[in-house]
Image 1 (cartoon, rainbow, N blue to C red):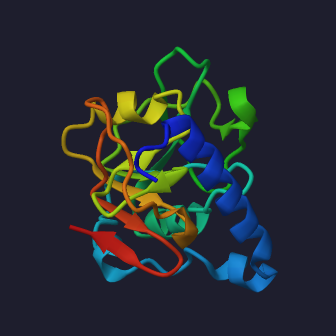
Image 2 (cartoon, rainbow, N blue to C red; image 1 turned 45 degrees about the vertical axis):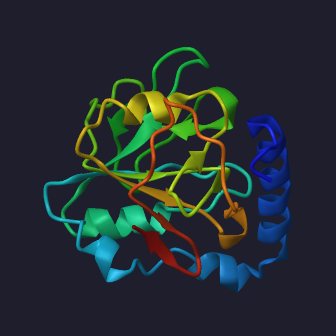
Length: 188
């Protein structure tokens, strides 16, 4: 599968993710990602900034992790996007704050929220591999934003079905520090 184009891989893993999410019971979906492993919750230190995202469609949902981080005294943030070409920012947001519809069906903080630099990024993805490479949506928003965060701990949040044998990697692709699925913590 590693010889397939990124576009073909995106289509394959989007369908696999959607089919998998559809197969989950309401209970399975509700409890997924609600109890972080100690290795992740140990990073939720008061004063740190943890960025997550509001899931779109069948994406794995990190909102419970953001609530846990917030309860531990962390500041929380979400990505903020204005267009395909504009750089993505991370804006302060707390669980329960209002969300506003942005481009691509994204729900994001108000445009006047404070810009912040996350210490921990819970990142969405289309696919990942054991080299901790991430295949995103294709616009490069996360790779560009993550390239500016020298010390951030980057965790991909995914369903286990999104694991690929090997993903093609370009020089600008930013590897993850770990991946959390509903079944496992995967790290080097």
